[in-house]
Length: 517
Image (cartoon, rainbow, N blue to C red; front, side, top):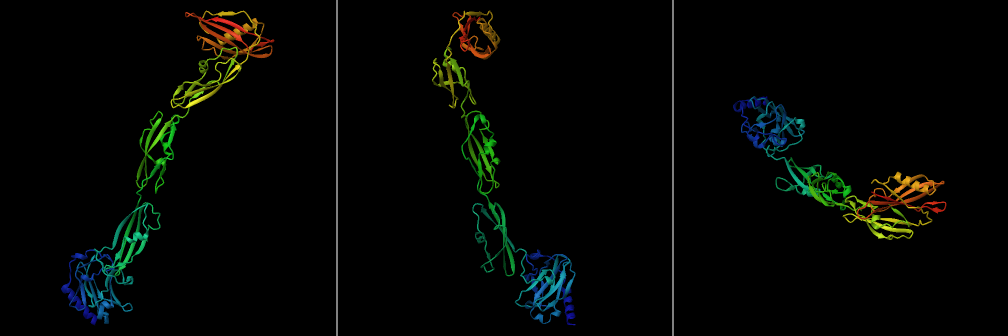
């Protein structure tokens, strides 16, 4: 009967004071904590006694269950009979939807009232207030079974999560203690309090450049706040390009600039940078065509964008001497005219891989036109423009070939044409001369013809021949003397067979003079 009378009285008061405007004011946003009930938004009523109502409407979530809960200290003397303690909550459309008596939980010394919202604004018209010094009254989202303790109301403008950033040089990492020393938590009285590290992606990381995060948490006055600290590690050190040794490249074996990269070393404090990734900023080497020192400007960039450059000198060199081509041995009979130095040098030519044709000279000479049989050493030399010198050692063999000589009448062969004797002409002439001496020769062939291509040049030239006679293999040579007469007279060509021919114990020698027109 007492509960019913209380209910009727409160309904009458609601009729007088009901309806409200959802002019939200400072409570137009959801609180930061679990508690939706701000005690500063409570007006204690004079009538009915031990009741209060909210001054401003409270913003809540639509179609969500909420619970009002009070502890016995807050309810005060109302705990003597909680069965008649009433709660009335209006929705923002003015309809009195939620009303009833609170439910007692005497074991926990609490009482509560559950309801489910329809809209996003509510006004508490009646809620108990024991007028005590306890403040444990709370409105939270969820049923009573979800209750896990009273917490103060935290206004929507309260900062619950702080954020900061610590820049760090990769080469100078910070310790955990150094990082934690940058952040300090205080209580409401300004005293430092200990916080916990609840998340840490930095400590166990490789600490390579990048962003890591640590989260600190501290609770005071049942309010928990967090500090999220980003640790951004920077690589501030540029790569280093180095040259293990000076780069010298033969001009004739010039390589591409990409191959020069492989001769360099790139080091970095963080990244592995292959030399093939080097950029070329300038290059005087690639277009170079002569000996000299040129430069290539390389640039290295690490993954953090740090750059460095190095100008690399590249020297194109010529360190190879000329190649001297010509016979290693020269044979000369004692009956032959001696060879002049110019005649010897004419048998050789030198080619340099850079300079092309270069001159050949005699740097050592034991021969010196000697006629005494023996082997004489000579050294030829050739130098290029870089003074690379090549030496070629040759031997002059002076061979004794004097012996019995068959003499015959001098024969002069005159030709009315200006052409030279062919190899066949020489062979036929040679066989004829032997036949005149009673010697039959076969398989006659020319081994080497010095006279060829020198038909109009004064001098003595040899034609070396081989033949068979009476089953014996023989060798000999013909000396051809080309003599230009005075007053621009036609050339006279003398041909003789000398030495090397030994038949029946006698030597055979022919001397033939040919007039050259």
